[in-house]
Image (cartoon, rainbow, N blue to C red):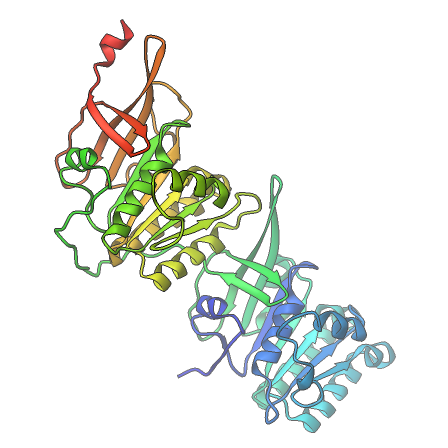
Length: 463
């Protein structure tokens, strides 16, 4: 079995199928400010020990004292390890005096003295400018990689490489792994993405994975794009109440456990309230639920919930988040963790439209929704999305949000005019695996919640 070592972040280890391969050469590439140094230092402190210490070599790109000063602001930076299991050294003077030959001599001397298990060189790319020519730099690469490999040292070569530059540089051929960090701007949003371009001797999760930089270091969020899973899972014949008896009847006795429901309708139609009925009906049965909302804050929710006699706290967990600077990949893992932590059986996401706006890449959004739906279905968690339609009266389409085809149930809410009065109407458009009542019915919102009445004849209202 190939030996691994942790990056210090469990989800980044997951992307790497267990962590970096030990005793290998890792090339960490990216533009300035993408977190290359933070990742290297995080790995250093996570894996260095008194028996197999770590050495961090700076070159000519960043002053030695600045590395230490900024490093101390990070929570994983343990000052007690400095001089015991973590050592810092500056190769800049050797480079300026005698070039790459002096670098090899300095590395040799410290490796023999410290017997490290992990070595970081930052910036590695800067040393290319000190080579006489390309052949000289390639000889240096060969000699350095041979020394590190022979001594079973895990090394990180950190450099300001663009994506294509990293793949075309001679360092790429020598390195056993290439990790690329980058920032991308879409309109007013700036996102950080990590890609594994190469990982010799191991599988890894492909594609671009979001990550955050904070005082805790680098925190990665693997791209939620589950492959097709043909493993059979248990499906109960028991029905799950919507919390509204007349709607249960229209759906042939409620939802299937683990099903996905889309509640679509214009502003003010009652979508959020319908989701709350679903959650608090489950709470009465001892089924924990989660409301993840990007629409309301806790003060607004408390006013709504108290009005209908429910309690803000209890078996329903509220995850109220702002859509501003929202990182969907982070949010979905927070949701999945919360589902596991409380044993949630019902989840309402209010709304899918806000999630779509926070995910500029439409393919990434569809993969995320599909994967979330499949994970909830396999574990029997009933999922309900709300979606705000653009048409206020007589809704004719559910837009291109891409939810209706993967939803097991689709409930349409709309406003209808009756003379000078405006009424609310409800229609069950779809119930997968069941018959449904397709009638358009009036419903009302009172202090008792939602009550559904008799069918409405829209043609008569239009006359």
